Image (cartoon, rainbow, N blue to C red; front, side, top):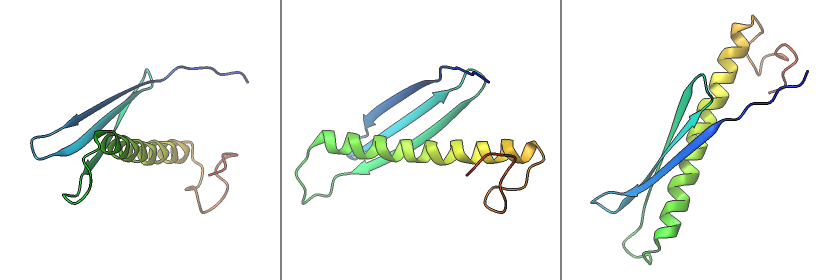
Length: 95
């Protein structure tokens, strides 16, 4: 069973007027889009290194998106009539 797809991700990072770096990540699967959000704020006592804020905000957006993607997979597995993941092996899918 061979299966190949290409999903596209767009990551936008920006800093607002209050000095908070925000990241907005969109994953386009071709049939649906999921979004993740993350933020980072530099402590006043820390050195202002924009790359660190970018990395933190982007990483948090990716974590948020990963959580949403796993939740979507769990819903899809349940939609096949399989038991909820974590209670039993779900239709051959190991979670």
